[in-house]
Image (cartoon, rainbow, N blue to C red):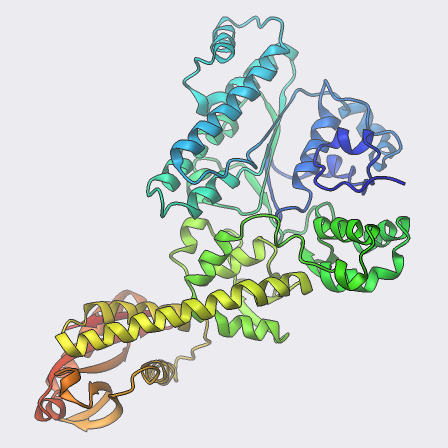
Length: 561
């Protein structure tokens, strides 16, 4: 019986080590035929990216071994004749560059590139180009300084050594960038430094490189397009939303059934389908998580029952920090996740080309992140909107056990911060912090609501009232109360002056466009003053703090005084 390939990502090991291999070898031809000289393929982690890249390396490499006998690609006779073992290939993976500080990440990345160069140069007995010989010696002596040009130097060296253009395979290119993004709170310059380094490295290797046959990059996210690929107009991106390479990453229904059957577990198919199936790539439904399927079979062969073997294996394979961080930055996401967990349809905005940098500025970007990383399925329903759903029970367990508990904690803490800032405002008259927190809350929560133009003010007012009514015992919260020459939208003040001598009067105003939203907030402040909305509360002996809340669609701006 063949061994289960737990954690095996090397094609030679897979074939020669008597492992069960789900034959994905036709991808070597399809990957070559994809449009674009530079091809970027994104898929969730643990879906076979590294193994597939290593398969491509072994197929095309001049130094490749004969590992493809009996596999599907062998039937492509003409393709085999023209391309099999015909190119020098560079394969580099950044999957282990996950340091928490830039200094350590820089050292690890440079060491990775030095080792790559040394291994390639050691196989070259002599290079005719004197400049390259000098660089070769520097790498071998560990004296190289131009690390960000390493891939460019190596493509040139291999081209001049073999007389053939080079195939460049860059695996998990986004891992160092994701780590920098995740840990930038510890090292403020980490993200910018890593983006700059990777941009220089990739630009040197990929832009106008005459020594390159083609290049393939893999990753989870199409990150930082505006920085990493700046100056590169020849990158063709194949994301989970693209109708290409749909079944090469992950297992299909037939592949899973055959694997279960091989291990005499075919009767488990329904349980396995509920837990690990359900992914949609490029419009193709029914893709299984390969990592979890393999681990499930491993546990069943070890003697566990079906119920005991059904566990969230994939979710726990690596850090979910970036996912948790984004969800925690959107505390009012809880309501939408509640809907997803109850199997309700949810239509959300998704931008397949959104970068990590933009996600912080765009609250709805969390949906792009969740879909790209495999935590949600997304099916396009219009140019900018997708219907999202939870793929299977394994991911559902993640939301129930980790995300919802985190959101409940964050929501409580954030609400406490808001109410504490409110109390400070009515006690001391300093409403700056309260205004900022109020703006953040409105922006985070209402960005997911479908706010019609006609009822927008009603929606905003209802939300603010509902929010202020929580945790404000001892305070009066009023709306549409006559004061001066009109009606106050919202007012809040302590019922007992021992708890504060300030009242907050709020006016909500819909802006004419997103460009004049700050001006609309100023107009709201002026309306409070001109229509005498302060009058009632000043007569009660309170000092009044006017706050203007302006909005346009889902954009909010809060102004004090």
